[in-house]
Each structure stands twice: as C-alpha cells, then as structure tokens.
Length: 459
Image (cartoon, rainbow, N blue to C red; front, side):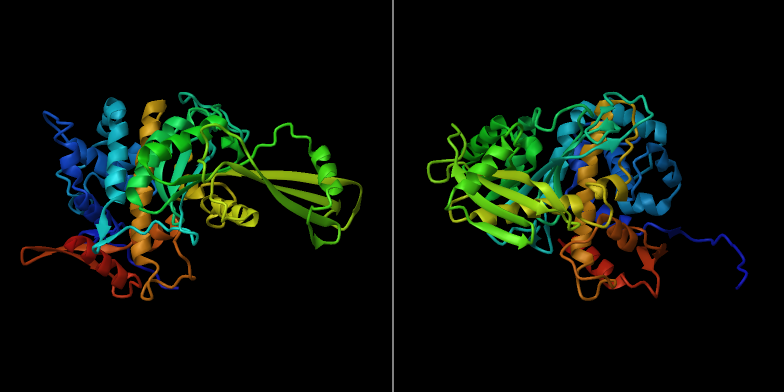
C-alpha cells in the first residue's frame, strides 16, 4: 500500500462539475429575467442568486440551507451558476421565509418553463403509454419528521409523525409536475381538487396526447371524479381517469356467493387452490365521463382455498378489488387492470422498499429544513424543479451507447444521475481569455457530458 503525501494544489478543483449543466439549464429558461424584475432588492444578493443557489444544493442532494456555506468561496460554483456572489446561510434562510408566499407560483412557473423547453431542437419526451395516452400519476407519501416541533407535523398513515406531500407525475419517465406539502393528518383526497386545477392544465399544455389520470383507492371520491371530468371539458381535451375502487364496507362474501351462483362467470385457475374472475359494470355517476365514454367499474374477485404455503384453508378466503375508469370501451377489463398495475412504477422505481424514494432518499428530502410549514412547502415545490433538472440530465446522458456502463433502462434513477454526472471531478482553467472546465482523462462519462453541454449551449 502506497503512502500518499497530502497536498493542497494551487488551482481550482471541483467535485461537482455537473453544476455546469445545471447552470446551462438556468440560462435556457432565462431564470434571472423571471425573478429579478419581479423581486427586486435594493442591495445585497439578488433573489435570482438565492433561488439558483438553493436549487443547486437540491440537485446535489442537500436541502439544509447551512450547506451553502461550503460554497461561499467556491469560484466554480459561482461561475457555473452565473452568480456574482453566494448567499450566506442566514441570508438564504431569511429570503426563503420572507418571499415564501409569493414564490409558490414562481416555482410552478419555473417548472413549467423548464418542462416546456426543448433540447437539441426536440421537445421533452415524457413517455407516453403504448395505448396512446400519457399518464398523470397521483399519490401521497409519508415524510418522517418525528422528534421535531415543525409546524403542522402530524401522525401520518405510515405510523410516523411527519408530513404527507401530494405528488403529481407526468409520463412514464418520472417528470414531476408538482410536489405539494400537506400536514401529516390530512386525508389523501382532501382538497386534491385544487391540485388538479393546477396540475391538469399544466399537463395538457405539455403533451398533445390524451391524458390518463391514475391514482390508488385513497382518491376514490365522487367529487374528484367530477373535477377531472370538469377539467377535461374546460380544457377541451380527452382526460380519462383510472382510480382504484375503495370497497369500504362492501359485502365481499355476498358478492362471492353471487358470482359462484352465476353460470356465466368465467373463472381462471392460476394454481391449485387459487382462482379469480373478472367482470365489469356501467356506473351512473352524474357529471363523470361522457355519453360516449361513461364511467364503469372493473371488478376482480380472487378466491383462495389453499394459501401460498400449501395449507388447505377451512373456509375460502376472498379478495375483492375494483377500478373505476372512463376509458373507452375498446379497453377490456384486463387492459384496465394492466394499466393500473403500471401506475406503481413511480413508487417502486429502484431497489429501496420505501415509496417515492428518489425524493426521500436520493435527494435526502425526507426531513425538511425549516420549522415553518410554508417554507417547507416552497422547498418541496423547488425540489420538483430540481428533480426535473436531474431527470433531463439523466435522460440525455445516461441512456446512450457511449454512456457509462449501466444495465439497459428507459430512465435512470436520480441517485445514478448524481453519481455519474453531478459528482464529477473537474478543474476550472482560464486560458487565452476563455474559461475551460477540464475533466479527467479516464472519465467514462466525458463524451456524453461534453455532448449534452454542447446541446444546451447551442439551443
């Protein structure tokens, strides 16, 4: 084993060369012109520098405002992001608290402008389904903020004290339209119609295909069904819904006896002791669906007489599931179930068992930085923008034939994007009046990094 001499070199090195790409995206959406004219400062750090600095921290997996102190004297951080100076942690915290209410809409505006931009002359591919619809996936998840005195922390459905943010994803590639923070005790469906009023018009403006709103049984609400249909009529777009049915107090045993007594029921045997049947019915829900595509519900009843361990049960065990949809009749009952199964992709992406782990684990966003609910709400809104920045970098660098070696996939996990593109060693050099970012000779991601930077530079 070699004994190294540790030495401080007389030139600028950075372990976050990927910030050069983040800076280019900021320039693409002209972030300074969106912020500074509307939120002027008499002296000190511009508000554009506040937001750019914090977004850069989020893209590095840091949500604590104190982390900005490590970049106060970092010349590359300032030049990559186009900053005249890096704010101190007290300044960053005070500005976020001061402008939090007026920056809610600003964060959504920045996110929309980013997702509506083009790269190399092409619009973003959000990932449409094979059936022609683009999914809009809705869900909530628990953030564990136990042992804190943060505002509106409450007991969540997961059994921990924290928050339950509401997430809206567009397409099958994981782009986030909104991450709206909620108190831990708030029910999933409560006030979700207000999120639809923002998210669905945004989704309709980004894609030209029909939209398919998918959600689990926590959103099984007649009020929400009507809101989705109303949004479709207002936007003059085809927006179908596919939401899992909440059986509540449905008489499962009575339904099972009725299906067994019906000679037309077709049972499918999956293994000895397990069989299931599928059927559907039209629903009369006023204001939901249309005459051509009325609301209907697909049911699946599973009967087990032998459990998965081979033990014969004294009495049959029944599981009744259902899915409410306004998809056209050309989609069969099995098609409906398959489309809903794909809904879980954004929850189960990656190897960690926790839901939405790209936000909670990869971006280290589970424990929010502020004691104030409104500030944490803004942090979540900015985190959605940061995730989309990382997603764009990953989609344009890590899926090509000359990308660093990885297994074949349609999208890369945010953690992979950080490891391969953000945490990249670089040296900043000034030569002949030009600034150069030098990457290592053995850097396996050099080709894709250089190409994508060039695409952003010339766009």
